[in-house]
Image 1 (cartoon, rainbow, N blue to C red):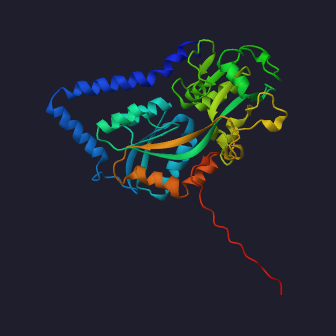
Image 2: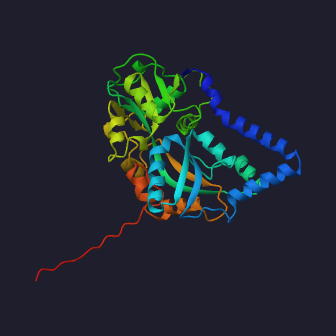
Length: 341
Protein backbone atom coordinates (compact mmCIF):
# COMPACT_ATOMS: atom_id res chain seq x y z
CA UNK A 1 0.00 0.00 0.00
CA UNK A 2 1.37 3.44 -0.96
CA UNK A 3 0.61 6.13 1.58
CA UNK A 4 0.52 9.84 0.80
CA UNK A 5 -0.91 11.18 4.03
CA UNK A 6 -2.47 8.19 5.82
CA UNK A 7 0.92 7.07 7.10
CA UNK A 8 0.85 10.00 9.50
CA UNK A 9 -1.75 8.20 11.57
CA UNK A 10 0.92 5.63 12.46
CA UNK A 11 2.71 8.27 14.51
CA UNK A 12 -0.17 8.54 16.96
CA UNK A 13 -1.12 4.88 16.97
CA UNK A 14 0.81 4.08 20.11
CA UNK A 15 -0.68 7.03 22.00
CA UNK A 16 -4.22 6.00 21.04
CA UNK A 17 -3.68 2.37 21.96
CA UNK A 18 -1.97 3.26 25.24
CA UNK A 19 -4.76 5.62 26.29
CA UNK A 20 -7.36 3.04 25.30
CA UNK A 21 -5.62 0.44 27.43
CA UNK A 22 -5.57 2.80 30.42
CA UNK A 23 -9.30 3.42 30.05
CA UNK A 24 -10.04 -0.30 29.87
CA UNK A 25 -8.00 -0.97 32.99
CA UNK A 26 -9.75 1.84 34.89
CA UNK A 27 -13.18 0.45 33.97
CA UNK A 28 -12.13 -2.98 35.14
CA UNK A 29 -10.97 -1.52 38.45
CA UNK A 30 -14.54 -0.38 39.12
CA UNK A 31 -16.03 -3.87 38.86
CA UNK A 32 -15.22 -4.67 42.46
CA UNK A 33 -12.87 -6.40 44.78
CA UNK A 34 -12.90 -9.68 42.85
CA UNK A 35 -11.50 -8.08 39.71
CA UNK A 36 -8.84 -6.29 41.72
CA UNK A 37 -7.87 -9.50 43.47
CA UNK A 38 -7.69 -11.41 40.22
CA UNK A 39 -5.52 -8.75 38.62
CA UNK A 40 -3.23 -8.74 41.65
CA UNK A 41 -2.84 -12.50 41.57
CA UNK A 42 -2.04 -12.45 37.86
CA UNK A 43 0.59 -9.77 38.39
CA UNK A 44 2.10 -11.62 41.33
CA UNK A 45 2.23 -14.85 39.40
CA UNK A 46 4.14 -13.17 36.59
CA UNK A 47 6.63 -11.22 38.62
CA UNK A 48 7.13 -12.85 42.04
CA UNK A 49 10.25 -14.69 43.13
CA UNK A 50 8.10 -17.85 43.42
CA UNK A 51 7.75 -17.98 39.63
CA UNK A 52 8.78 -21.27 38.05
CA UNK A 53 11.41 -19.68 35.81
CA UNK A 54 14.95 -18.82 36.80
CA UNK A 55 18.06 -17.94 34.79
CA UNK A 56 18.49 -21.56 33.68
CA UNK A 57 14.96 -22.83 33.10
CA UNK A 58 11.42 -21.84 32.32
CA UNK A 59 9.46 -20.23 29.50
CA UNK A 60 8.90 -16.49 29.02
CA UNK A 61 7.57 -14.27 26.26
CA UNK A 62 9.69 -11.58 24.61
CA UNK A 63 8.43 -8.85 22.28
CA UNK A 64 11.01 -7.67 19.76
CA UNK A 65 11.04 -5.22 16.89
CA UNK A 66 10.88 -7.26 13.69
CA UNK A 67 13.83 -5.28 12.32
CA UNK A 68 16.05 -7.23 14.73
CA UNK A 69 14.69 -10.72 14.17
CA UNK A 70 18.02 -12.22 12.97
CA UNK A 71 20.05 -11.04 15.99
CA UNK A 72 17.29 -11.76 18.53
CA UNK A 73 16.78 -15.24 17.10
CA UNK A 74 20.53 -15.91 17.25
CA UNK A 75 20.76 -14.76 20.89
CA UNK A 76 17.76 -16.71 22.16
CA UNK A 77 18.68 -19.91 20.30
CA UNK A 78 22.24 -19.73 21.64
CA UNK A 79 20.94 -19.34 25.20
CA UNK A 80 18.52 -22.24 24.76
CA UNK A 81 21.46 -24.29 23.48
CA UNK A 82 23.32 -23.70 26.74
CA UNK A 83 20.25 -24.27 28.94
CA UNK A 84 17.94 -26.84 27.28
CA UNK A 85 15.20 -26.18 29.87
CA UNK A 86 15.05 -22.47 28.99
CA UNK A 87 12.58 -21.41 26.29
CA UNK A 88 11.75 -18.04 24.77
CA UNK A 89 8.48 -17.33 23.01
CA UNK A 90 9.47 -14.37 20.81
CA UNK A 91 6.78 -12.11 19.35
CA UNK A 92 8.21 -10.16 16.42
CA UNK A 93 6.20 -6.97 16.11
CA UNK A 94 6.57 -3.36 14.96
CA UNK A 95 8.28 -1.44 17.73
CA UNK A 96 5.17 0.35 18.99
CA UNK A 97 3.34 -2.95 19.38
CA UNK A 98 6.33 -4.51 21.16
CA UNK A 99 6.31 -1.70 23.72
CA UNK A 100 2.55 -2.07 24.17
CA UNK A 101 2.97 -5.79 24.86
CA UNK A 102 5.45 -4.91 27.60
CA UNK A 103 3.06 -2.38 29.14
CA UNK A 104 0.24 -4.92 29.09
CA UNK A 105 2.55 -7.36 30.87
CA UNK A 106 2.01 -9.90 28.08
CA UNK A 107 5.77 -9.81 27.41
CA UNK A 108 8.50 -10.00 30.05
CA UNK A 109 11.09 -8.27 27.88
CA UNK A 110 10.97 -5.86 24.94
CA UNK A 111 13.88 -5.46 22.54
CA UNK A 112 13.51 -2.06 20.91
CA UNK A 113 15.39 1.07 19.83
CA UNK A 114 14.10 3.45 22.48
CA UNK A 115 13.66 3.75 26.22
CA UNK A 116 10.25 4.09 27.83
CA UNK A 117 8.62 7.50 27.94
CA UNK A 118 7.86 9.18 31.27
CA UNK A 119 4.19 8.30 30.84
CA UNK A 120 5.01 4.63 30.22
CA UNK A 121 7.32 4.47 33.25
CA UNK A 122 4.66 6.08 35.43
CA UNK A 123 2.11 3.51 34.29
CA UNK A 124 4.39 0.62 35.29
CA UNK A 125 5.02 2.27 38.66
CA UNK A 126 1.26 2.60 39.19
CA UNK A 127 1.08 -1.18 38.77
CA UNK A 128 3.82 -1.45 41.42
CA UNK A 129 5.88 -3.15 38.75
CA UNK A 130 9.61 -3.08 38.18
CA UNK A 131 11.40 -2.14 35.00
CA UNK A 132 15.04 -2.15 33.97
CA UNK A 133 16.75 -0.92 30.81
CA UNK A 134 19.93 -2.30 29.30
CA UNK A 135 21.72 -0.88 26.26
CA UNK A 136 22.94 -3.91 24.31
CA UNK A 137 24.11 -2.77 20.87
CA UNK A 138 24.56 -0.08 18.24
CA UNK A 139 22.71 -0.68 14.97
CA UNK A 140 22.61 1.09 11.64
CA UNK A 141 19.59 1.53 9.38
CA UNK A 142 20.63 0.24 5.97
CA UNK A 143 19.41 2.12 2.89
CA UNK A 144 19.07 -0.21 -0.07
CA UNK A 145 18.33 0.18 -3.77
CA UNK A 146 17.99 -2.15 -6.72
CA UNK A 147 21.24 -3.06 -8.49
CA UNK A 148 19.70 -1.76 -11.70
CA UNK A 149 19.99 1.66 -10.12
CA UNK A 150 23.54 2.92 -10.62
CA UNK A 151 23.18 5.57 -7.92
CA UNK A 152 24.17 3.98 -4.61
CA UNK A 153 25.42 7.13 -2.86
CA UNK A 154 23.31 9.72 -1.06
CA UNK A 155 23.92 12.61 1.31
CA UNK A 156 22.05 13.47 4.48
CA UNK A 157 21.12 16.76 2.83
CA UNK A 158 19.51 14.89 -0.07
CA UNK A 159 17.69 12.58 2.33
CA UNK A 160 16.37 15.56 4.24
CA UNK A 161 15.08 17.06 1.01
CA UNK A 162 13.38 13.77 0.13
CA UNK A 163 11.71 13.60 3.54
CA UNK A 164 10.58 17.23 3.47
CA UNK A 165 9.17 16.80 -0.03
CA UNK A 166 11.62 19.03 -1.91
CA UNK A 167 13.14 16.14 -3.87
CA UNK A 168 10.41 13.93 -5.32
CA UNK A 169 11.96 12.52 -8.52
CA UNK A 170 15.08 10.43 -9.10
CA UNK A 171 16.21 12.88 -11.78
CA UNK A 172 16.85 15.39 -8.97
CA UNK A 173 19.53 13.18 -7.42
CA UNK A 174 23.11 13.41 -8.66
CA UNK A 175 24.38 10.34 -10.45
CA UNK A 176 20.96 8.74 -10.85
CA UNK A 177 20.12 6.83 -14.02
CA UNK A 178 16.45 6.70 -13.02
CA UNK A 179 13.48 8.94 -13.59
CA UNK A 180 10.16 8.78 -11.81
CA UNK A 181 8.86 9.38 -8.31
CA UNK A 182 11.04 8.37 -5.37
CA UNK A 183 9.23 5.77 -3.25
CA UNK A 184 10.38 5.07 0.31
CA UNK A 185 9.85 1.48 1.43
CA UNK A 186 9.48 0.51 5.09
CA UNK A 187 8.41 -2.62 6.91
CA UNK A 188 5.48 -1.16 8.87
CA UNK A 189 3.84 2.16 9.70
CA UNK A 190 4.63 1.59 13.40
CA UNK A 191 8.17 0.28 12.97
CA UNK A 192 11.33 1.69 14.49
CA UNK A 193 12.79 2.22 11.01
CA UNK A 194 10.10 4.67 9.92
CA UNK A 195 9.90 6.31 13.33
CA UNK A 196 13.66 6.88 13.38
CA UNK A 197 13.75 8.48 9.93
CA UNK A 198 10.78 10.78 10.61
CA UNK A 199 12.36 11.89 13.89
CA UNK A 200 15.76 12.32 12.24
CA UNK A 201 14.38 14.95 9.87
CA UNK A 202 11.62 16.33 12.15
CA UNK A 203 8.90 15.22 9.75
CA UNK A 204 5.35 15.82 10.94
CA UNK A 205 3.52 16.20 7.62
CA UNK A 206 4.02 13.21 5.33
CA UNK A 207 1.42 14.13 2.72
CA UNK A 208 4.16 14.95 0.18
CA UNK A 209 5.90 11.59 0.58
CA UNK A 210 5.41 8.32 -1.27
CA UNK A 211 5.76 5.66 1.45
CA UNK A 212 5.14 1.98 0.87
CA UNK A 213 4.90 -0.47 3.78
CA UNK A 214 5.85 -3.98 2.70
CA UNK A 215 5.01 -5.91 5.88
CA UNK A 216 8.46 -6.88 7.17
CA UNK A 217 12.15 -6.31 6.47
CA UNK A 218 12.51 -9.34 4.21
CA UNK A 219 9.62 -8.12 2.05
CA UNK A 220 11.20 -4.66 1.90
CA UNK A 221 14.30 -6.23 0.37
CA UNK A 222 12.28 -8.21 -2.16
CA UNK A 223 10.21 -5.18 -3.16
CA UNK A 224 13.24 -2.93 -3.62
CA UNK A 225 15.04 -5.60 -5.66
CA UNK A 226 12.16 -5.58 -8.16
CA UNK A 227 11.48 -1.83 -8.17
CA UNK A 228 14.47 0.39 -9.05
CA UNK A 229 12.64 3.64 -8.23
CA UNK A 230 12.58 2.78 -4.53
CA UNK A 231 14.80 3.24 -1.48
CA UNK A 232 14.34 0.65 1.24
CA UNK A 233 15.05 1.04 4.95
CA UNK A 234 15.96 -2.11 6.93
CA UNK A 235 17.87 -3.24 10.01
CA UNK A 236 21.40 -4.04 8.87
CA UNK A 237 21.46 -7.40 10.71
CA UNK A 238 19.24 -8.80 7.93
CA UNK A 239 22.13 -8.61 5.47
CA UNK A 240 25.30 -8.58 7.60
CA UNK A 241 25.82 -12.17 8.80
CA UNK A 242 28.23 -13.51 6.20
CA UNK A 243 28.02 -17.08 7.53
CA UNK A 244 24.30 -17.45 6.86
CA UNK A 245 23.03 -18.48 3.43
CA UNK A 246 19.91 -16.36 3.89
CA UNK A 247 22.11 -13.25 4.11
CA UNK A 248 23.65 -14.11 0.75
CA UNK A 249 20.25 -14.71 -0.81
CA UNK A 250 18.74 -11.51 0.59
CA UNK A 251 21.71 -9.44 -0.56
CA UNK A 252 21.31 -10.53 -4.18
CA UNK A 253 20.14 -7.81 -6.53
CA UNK A 254 20.49 -4.88 -4.13
CA UNK A 255 23.00 -2.14 -3.31
CA UNK A 256 23.60 -0.98 0.24
CA UNK A 257 23.83 2.77 -0.16
CA UNK A 258 26.68 4.85 1.14
CA UNK A 259 25.57 7.88 3.17
CA UNK A 260 27.54 11.08 3.73
CA UNK A 261 26.86 13.80 6.27
CA UNK A 262 28.71 16.29 4.05
CA UNK A 263 26.59 18.43 1.76
CA UNK A 264 29.28 18.32 -0.97
CA UNK A 265 31.36 15.14 -0.54
CA UNK A 266 34.79 15.38 -2.15
CA UNK A 267 34.99 11.67 -3.00
CA UNK A 268 33.52 8.26 -2.29
CA UNK A 269 35.67 8.19 0.84
CA UNK A 270 33.21 10.65 2.40
CA UNK A 271 30.39 8.11 2.21
CA UNK A 272 29.86 5.43 4.87
CA UNK A 273 27.82 2.25 5.19
CA UNK A 274 25.99 0.71 8.17
CA UNK A 275 28.56 -2.01 8.73
CA UNK A 276 30.70 -2.57 11.81
CA UNK A 277 33.79 -0.65 10.80
CA UNK A 278 31.87 2.57 10.22
CA UNK A 279 29.55 1.99 13.18
CA UNK A 280 32.48 1.49 15.55
CA UNK A 281 34.15 4.66 14.28
CA UNK A 282 30.82 6.51 14.59
CA UNK A 283 31.03 7.56 10.98
CA UNK A 284 27.67 6.26 9.76
CA UNK A 285 25.06 9.01 10.17
CA UNK A 286 22.02 6.75 10.63
CA UNK A 287 23.07 4.71 13.66
CA UNK A 288 20.93 4.04 16.73
CA UNK A 289 21.01 2.20 20.04
CA UNK A 290 19.29 -1.11 20.74
CA UNK A 291 17.86 -1.77 24.22
CA UNK A 292 16.35 -4.56 26.27
CA UNK A 293 13.61 -3.35 28.61
CA UNK A 294 12.64 -5.78 31.36
CA UNK A 295 9.56 -5.97 33.61
CA UNK A 296 11.06 -8.79 35.60
CA UNK A 297 11.01 -8.05 39.32
CA UNK A 298 13.08 -11.05 40.39
CA UNK A 299 16.03 -13.14 39.22
CA UNK A 300 14.38 -14.96 36.35
CA UNK A 301 15.01 -16.15 32.84
CA UNK A 302 14.85 -12.61 31.44
CA UNK A 303 17.64 -11.50 33.74
CA UNK A 304 19.66 -14.53 32.71
CA UNK A 305 19.44 -13.51 29.05
CA UNK A 306 20.38 -9.92 29.88
CA UNK A 307 23.44 -11.09 31.83
CA UNK A 308 24.40 -13.42 28.99
CA UNK A 309 24.38 -10.50 26.57
CA UNK A 310 26.21 -8.05 28.85
CA UNK A 311 28.78 -10.30 30.47
CA UNK A 312 28.99 -13.50 28.48
CA UNK A 313 29.47 -14.48 24.85
CA UNK A 314 26.22 -12.79 23.81
CA UNK A 315 28.36 -9.83 22.75
CA UNK A 316 30.17 -12.06 20.28
CA UNK A 317 26.85 -13.10 18.74
CA UNK A 318 25.80 -9.46 18.40
CA UNK A 319 29.12 -8.73 16.73
CA UNK A 320 28.75 -11.69 14.37
CA UNK A 321 25.33 -10.40 13.31
CA UNK A 322 26.84 -7.12 12.16
CA UNK A 323 25.95 -4.89 15.12
CA UNK A 324 28.34 -3.34 17.64
CA UNK A 325 27.89 -4.77 21.17
CA UNK A 326 27.52 -2.16 23.90
CA UNK A 327 29.83 -4.23 26.08
CA UNK A 328 32.62 -5.74 23.94
CA UNK A 329 33.41 -9.34 24.78
CA UNK A 330 36.87 -9.40 26.43
CA UNK A 331 39.58 -11.02 24.42
CA UNK A 332 42.66 -12.37 26.13
CA UNK A 333 45.82 -12.23 24.07
CA UNK A 334 48.93 -14.05 25.24
CA UNK A 335 52.14 -12.48 24.04
CA UNK A 336 55.25 -14.61 24.16
CA UNK A 337 58.77 -13.46 23.63
CA UNK A 338 60.87 -16.17 22.06
CA UNK A 339 64.64 -16.07 22.10
CA UNK A 340 66.85 -18.04 19.80
CA UNK A 341 69.76 -19.59 21.57
